[in-house]
Image 1 (cartoon, one colour):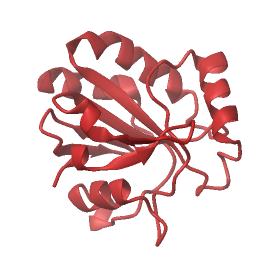
Image 2 (tube, one colour):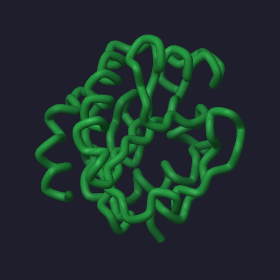
Image 3 (cartoon, rainbow, N blue to C red):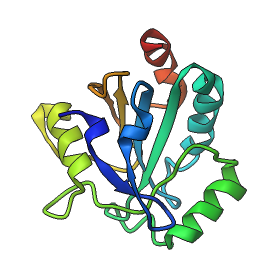
Image 4 (cartoon, rainbow, N blue to C red):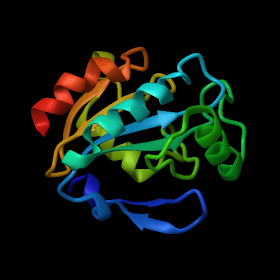
Length: 158
């Protein structure tokens, strides 16, 4: 099993297989619009623009599980990302990343790349997972890790 085996919901309510991205290097990020790390959207967009022609994309997954910092509707989130940060990479429907309602994708990611002290929980918004072209999890990054700090790791996979 790998990342490409999962299906997620798009912001407009359609089901989308992540197999659509098969063969690409991915950076999967749980996002929020009202978080201290929200300005990372700018850096994520810059990474996307820098590497997208080399089969790389960022996949954003809004989540409201951390201090209710993503309260908007999927439509409001899309508008915020577009107007505030000019985001052109895919930002999907809100989902849960922790607990019994955690999306199966996030259950897989956290098992494949545990956090500090082997924890499977996502610590906060903007936790990042780097995925290679085979759909395998290569590395997990803490929320405070800036997108620019990940660029060399992405470059190495491309």
